Picture 1 (cartoon, rainbow, N blue to C red):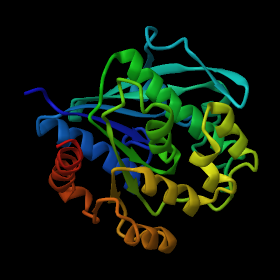
Picture 2: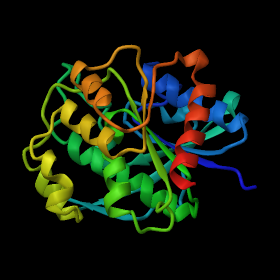
Picture 3: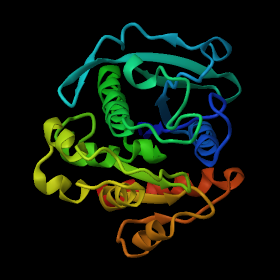
Amino acid sequence: MDKKRVLYISQEISPFLPTSDIAAAARKLPQGIQEGGKEIRAFMPRYGCINERRHQLHEVIRLSGMNLIINDVDHPLIIKVASVPQAKIQVYFIDNEDFFKRKATVSDEEGEYFDDNDERSMFFVRGVLETVKKLGWKPDIIHCHGWMTALTPLYIKKLYQNDPHFADAKVVYSVYDNGFNKNWDANFYEKLKFDGFDDADIDDLKDVDFATLTKKAIQISDGVVQGSETIDADVAKAIEGSETPFLEYYSEESCVKPVNEFYDQIFEEIVV
């Protein structure tokens, strides 16, 4: 029997960024799930604050070179890779000078969230999916960590639903207490329409704050995991009222086994 394949798409991964709930989980799970017999790939943005020399990032020429159009503007896609030797895993980085050259992650030194985080998220998610296609790697489970990845379920279920790489993939979304307090660009809805979404797919994304974005991900995903011990109250209420299968919070030290079982449950219940 072929190994199940799990694609990790994360806003942060340790040790490339300081430890957080997201970075810790996105570091722990790929290693544990791989050691448990599944095949994994892991992706994150190549933020400008990541020390490429220290972490030995290098460009993967055969995967770079594509251009992605976001809001009618061409943006070159650069793919880099680095290893986490103690975990025996590789991490792929989505890079682009327009979106990820700045020496920060999602906000500036004053804590002000970047005005183009919506486009950065679109570029990141699409960059991962197009790179996975170029790798010729077909995931069974796609596990998303952090709001920078929250558009993934929407893209998988609406724009990539007929793509053979993703048609059978099940999307799991982890919810954390890491949010943002600045609404996304007022033209975000039009940017999604330019990408090819129908009005009916995105009617609830005309005014996007953190809770709205997260609720959309919960609604469309095949499974939801609580990644932080406490989460936004509106989001928690949305999870309670949702029929999407849900896995409660487990600490970093104990999360691998229940998450692995959750993957199997999600895949088997939907496929069988």
